[in-house]
Length: 137
Image 1 (spheres, rainbow, N blue to C red):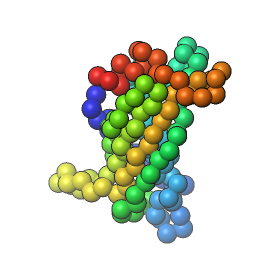
Image 2: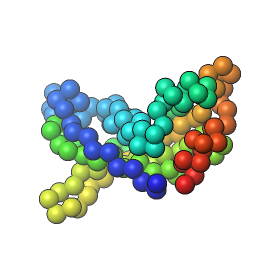
Image 3: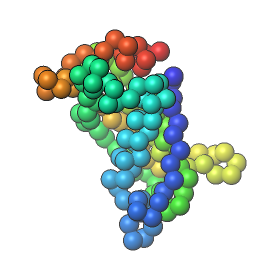
C-alpha cells in the first residue's frame, strides 16, 4: 500500500474563535490517519503491544502550515511511508482540500518519524517481522 487516504471533517472544537483549525489539531488529524492505516492492515495498536511488547511512539516531526483549514470543511489526510528501517518508520502526511472539480490544495505537510519502542526495554527495538513486512509491501 503506497498511500493511505483518510477523510476528516473539521468540527467546531477543532477551531479557534475565528473558525480556523488550531495548529495542534492538524497533528491529531495525522495521528488518526496513521491509526486508521494500521487498522486497515488488521494491525491494532493494543494487539501489537500485547502480542509483541512494542508501542509506536513519535520520535520527531516537522510540519509546514501552508493554508488554513476552516470550520466544517471536509479534508483528506494522505499518508505514505517515506523511509522504513528496522526500528522506525518515517511518514509523509499531507492534509488537503479538494474543490468540486477534484483539484487538490495542500494545506499542511508533515514528516513524522515513529519508533518501535520496546515496552520492557523502554528503548527502540526492531519492528516485529509481520509488522515490518506489512509496511515493506
